[in-house]
Image 1 (cartoon, helix red, strand yellow):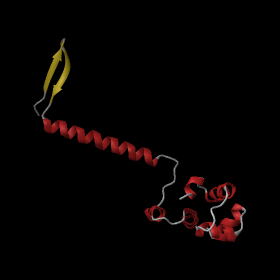
Image 2: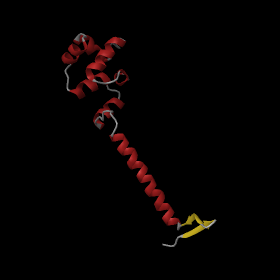
Image 3: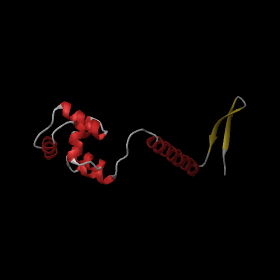
Image 4: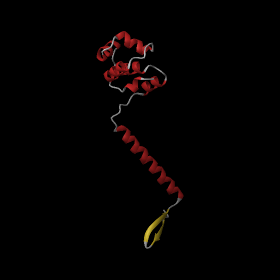
Length: 120
């Protein structure tokens, strides 16, 4: 490889390299940044969810129902854990009721999610 070193005051100041080498160095730097971002994403405490669940949420399915089903909990079990009536929970999932802040917090706690995760 043909590299030219340009000195200033007797010390290397610049390196002139072929353009194809420069492009490859840029690609390698970008790959390294991508790998570091990937590793950082894996090391967070945030929960990963399956693509199918993401698609349901994006398609407008009720987030409360999606999370409940993902956790493998029945409406009766969730209602008991959250201290709400099963019929009230059913109405929230069906979109007939919105649920108070207290109820949504209790449901979020029972599902181990943030309240924001239960809102459309």
